[in-house]
Length: 142
Image (cartoon, rainbow, N blue to C red; front, side, top):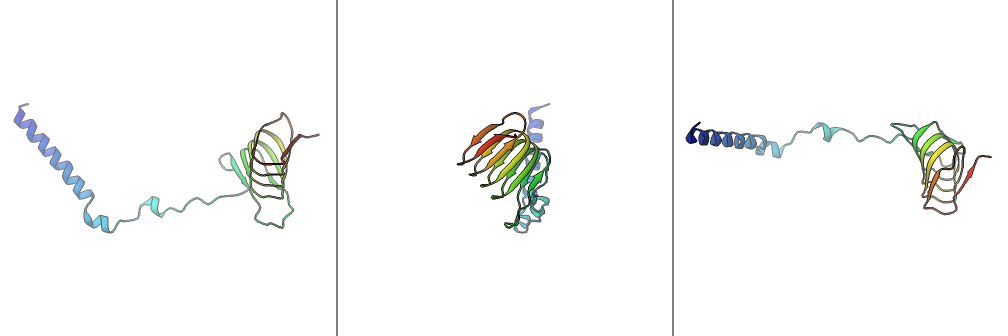
C-alpha cells in the first residue's frame, strides 16, 4: 500500500472518530441529560434479623422489648441492639456492637467486641476473640 493511500485512510479514520466523539457529547445532551438505570434505581434497603448472602444484622427497634433476638446458622452476624438477649445458631464470625447483651451461640470461630459489658456463652471450641470494648466475658456452655 503506498504512503499517500495510508495517510489518507489514517486521516479519514481520525476524522470519523472525532465526528463520533462530538456527536456523542453534543451540547443538547449535556444540558438535558436523560436518567440512566443507575440514577433511577433505589438503594437497597437494610433487612434486619434475616441471614442474606451469609450475613445477618440483628436488631430490635422496640426498646421496651424483652424478647430474645434469634438467628439460625449464618456465616456472620452483627449484633446491634443493646440490653438484649440473643440466641444464635452456628455463626462463623460475630461482631458485637451492642452493650449489656447476653449472647448464647451454638458455635463460633471468631468474636469481635466493640461494645461493653456483654456476656457470651458458646458451645464447642473456644473462639478467637478481639475485645475492643470493656467488661465483656466469654464462657463455655456448662
